[in-house]
Amino acid sequence: MAPLAAAVTAKWGTAARHSLPTASLKTAYNLSSSFWIQPSSLKIAYVGRGRRIERAAGILILARKKSGFAELLFNRRNEQEGLQQQRPRLQRGRVSPRLDVPTNIPRPPYVGLPKEPEFVDDYQIQDTEGIAGMRAAGKLAAAVLNHAGTLVKPGVTTDEIDKAVHQMTIEAGAYPSPLGYGTFPKSVCTSVNECICHGIPDSRALLDGDIINIDVTVYLNGYHGDTSKTFLCGNVTDEAKQLVEVTREALDKAIAVCGPGEEFRKIGKVINDLADKYKYGVVRNFVGHGVGKIFHSGPSVLHFRNNEPGRMQLNQTFTIEPMLTMGSIKGRMWDDRWTVVTEDGSLTAQFEHTLLITETGVEILTL
Image (cartoon, rainbow, N blue to C red):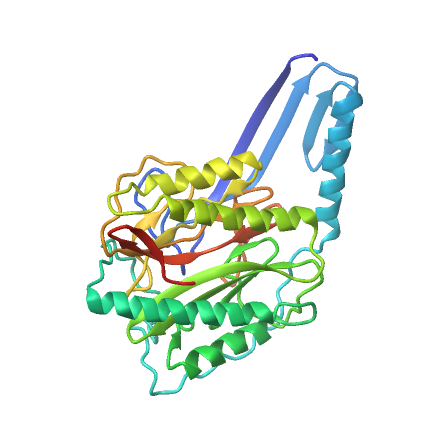
């Protein structure tokens, strides 16, 4: 085959606001709770000797005609892309009014403030009381999430899921942490198909073949428990099922390397290694975080390979929440200033647990 040369030019857009479950990291990675880079245009031109010219969406490719095994792989890729194109892009629905919380239920300190609180760099290390509080909050968050998952079926709206999460949370005497976090108007995040995170529940009904991440956080007796899963809705394609299962496995492998004194960078390595095996992307702009009395604090837990310093400490609590994609890892934020979708519309999945570092390793608090 003739040598192939590529010329790539990119023009990057401006920064846009972002918040909720991200954390700040003041390094070359440009991650923060209020910084987001979006590409406004990307042009790629491949130049080489060949007989066949293909042009699509501003991309010009000159290459030899394919045959045999190469043609087979090309056709299979086109079939997969065709399946993606048949799935309609996510559209926003109507957002219902904010739900009430009984006045006797304690609120997190940020509720009622005009904007989300500043990110706190300090680690959250729990004493005996704190460990008990985190276990209780984690247990409730897991129960609420599991209940929400039973509602996932074609025809059910994400607003109905939000109402169920809200009701179960307040019946347990807890506050739904997302509600009133800055301008977030709902009690849970529901991220469907290409939505990376922070989807706002609305009137859109789930469709057969959708996947949906449900991200639950509850504030119980002064402590936050934070967890999420991606659920399958009806008859889901094998490709989507694999993405979901690999993302679940990525979280499991990341948890397995945790323990007192372990480097946080190990988490990113094992997740990235697994994603590479399946040719999935690892979202970089959203990270895990410390959690406890404060919703979001240090450390910023990176899910991709990195050389950042930092080691896990005994009785520390934090989340790991990898987001994998079938295509681009870059996000596009809707004008609601919360919903973030993959720029190419490719599917994405996420799983999350709240963890406690123990003398012998790690305890998953949200099971």
